[in-house]
Image (cartoon, rainbow, N blue to C red; front, side, top):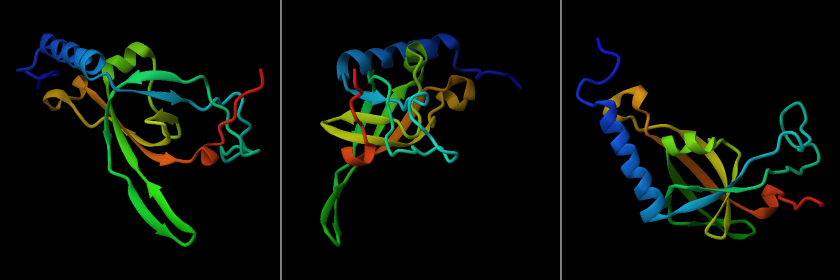
Length: 156
């Protein structure tokens, strides 16, 4: 049994990646700002939670992707209505490797004037069904309040 797909040569995969990279970066032009938790500066207890309730984040950076924004849902709660929303972001795996970035659960996103927290990251799409030709990284996130994130500007 062969180690790679018989009918899909590497040249075709490279062409596929370059076309999709151009589509995402130059034509569609969607991007999000991502903030990763600074493990060195955040004080964590043995459970990995912030001891003082404040997490510090690294400087944010912008990443190009395709975004699927799901319609917000109004939840009727005891203390009034609350608007919940979730989104999906799709990254080209080869672009992430070039930028030395990979989304992780717990990262904070700034998109469309709202804050989002990453729930899950998966890699569901394989070209020709072969694990060597991993193409896409899918990230799901939910809308969160600034007070839940506890983002504070650092003293300079």
